[in-house]
Length: 523
Image (cartoon, rainbow, N blue to C red):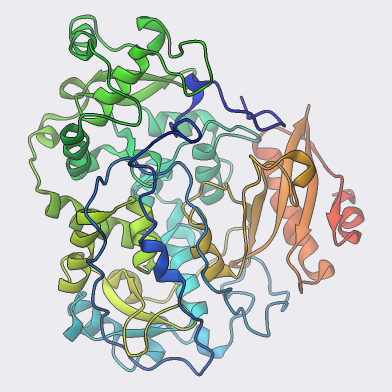
């Protein structure tokens, strides 16, 4: 199922992001508005900044409820990344160096820091631990390796290991070529079978569970204790964005007595109105999931199956009782390792924190408890003389090497789910136009960026007609030569086509226009 071309709301039983009604009074909807300011500082135009000290954390965010993540991350206003004069070098898409890599970028991550990366890592995140200087190219390569898109190690362990590397995989009901959680695995692992993806995510006994992280996500089951801070917060507020109905205790008793169930077992998900007009049973089940009484560890026909957490989650994980500080601190480390290099906005957005929970994250970064090393990334916003990001110290200890993936990227992939971060890293301005009226769309309904040579080289709006993958629109990034990059585009399209069982590719429109002929040429 996919959203119709007029972009009307979905059938709620298929909705995993659980958006509230438009215009509704939703106290918990804007979770990262204060953090967005981190990416609104001017872009440095001088030479690479000197070694910096750790920034003082922003603890002025007013306290509030830090519960449900927004369904989709919004763009911030980060300045566009400077990809340098070699942006159109035409380097081999699968070479060991980025297309804009120069000798300095290939000399090793710690080569420009003035302090050994290992020594900085030993200092953790504390101000006295030293700050590593990174070029934008170095940061980008660290990020791609952390995300499993550079080097052979990313394929080790399959989907199960990939989920643990990423920490969270966002769920979304849209299925154009495949659903996003499948596309995320494909982008990193290649033509992994779709049933294998499903088995790795939803398995019996549980290896994963669904909960709120960046959005509605599939999460490693061993992370269950780390989200107790959010479950407690929901319980303390006693409501979500729907009013919790009476009879929740009866629903819980029904699951306890009768076993796992779906909304269809308790009267269905809707009242008959708009898609957000949930039935009391649906609201009750979701509330019980929010507070941790129920859990979803598997799906049937893309429908959630709700079971008692005490039945589905291993006892040793249920027994762990972590404080809010322990939860957020450990999750900050997970987010930092997943992202590779991240500023405060990126970490806040990964976990969708606000208020007192954002303040806990700030303290964990300042004290070093999160286990991340302060770094300065050239060109990223920040104050002079202060670190403007954090990195995984283990990642800093070695230079990223290996082949780059050439692939289409889901709009909900953690590589690009924060649009301001995407622009900061890749110089790539990206907007998902699902809800834009058809006649106003610039790039298409479900535009997927194309990753090649360690950069985002363009975008494609894909569809399927029988066994043909149709590229309704293809756009190459400005300044890139069609002659040099058409091959990478074609590789990305044909690889995706073969994965979803198509035996031909047809490009309908392209910018620049000559790409149509190049990409439609027989292979």
